[in-house]
Length: 420
Image (tube, rainbow, N blue to C red; front, top):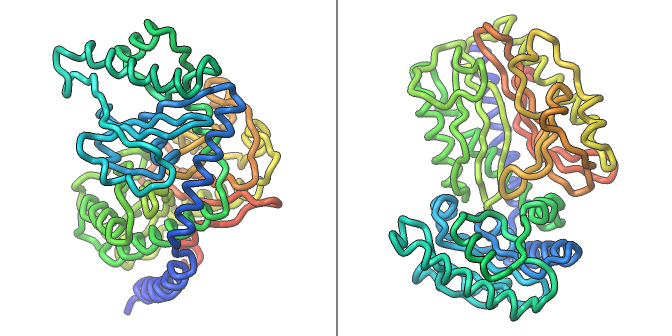
């Protein structure tokens, strides 16, 4: 057996034993799931109330899930406005669901009433779109006026022009709900953190099983299919991106998965971007050598730099550090790699990619914003190293919890240079 094959077998055996322990340790009970739903709704209501918001209408299915714990056709409803929730600050939560889907969420203690949704989308309403938007606005206005009276404003996370105009005609004061939702979602409860540990552990099982099928002659798309299959098999839901590439398609980054046939000695680099167990985002990046080849000097160099960037930047994280301070003190990338740098240094994670996003100092003037890291934020620390004109690049990423004094690693999949 080749040395690299022996190392890979040892890694897989150790991972299987460790992951079985982690999955058993972090499994959620029905009481845990209720506690998560209760915490999320209470936290959102508190933030809305402090902002003088009487109620919120949520269309983004991730926000609906955060506020209610309810899921139905999550991907499809991202682009079809046929499902939404009315969340009163001090009154009921009303879920407006797709026709004849009431049975899916009737058991949830976070939802007081379920009604059929009214859709103005042309797909559903055709030439009656304006009429249906008016019906929608009348129903929302009646709920808002009854629950909030003349107090506060109505927050909406996203809105098409027809229903917005209909609300304006009724004199309903509307504000953007996204700042409130993003800030609510950014701080996790103890039960949420345990759910994230469980989701990440399952995601790493999926990664390990995908790795077993990696070999010269396999296509990138074969490997992505394996990761998707394993995610679903272990309680996950779907993938948000197609970021798995090999060899020269790893540089520059953000090339989508293709049917390229992988060759021995290639880097296969990927970003999981999984919506995993409990609807939680599992966001880990790794780069593996295809086949039994030992890494080249160039592969060792770019991998080592990506690892160095991760470790350096993770050591800077603690509560109270400002986003600007982090950007200013972050690892200084060698100039040859700067043009191909990743979009950001850090982003939040929960039910998806979340607030905050911290940008490179070079991008601060165009995109940066202020804020502070807080205890119980979960963030993903990013690195991409690939020179313009270089053959390959390396994408690495770790998911971490910000604690009172620093961080707790949530992702534990081994790095290659620990075994080279």
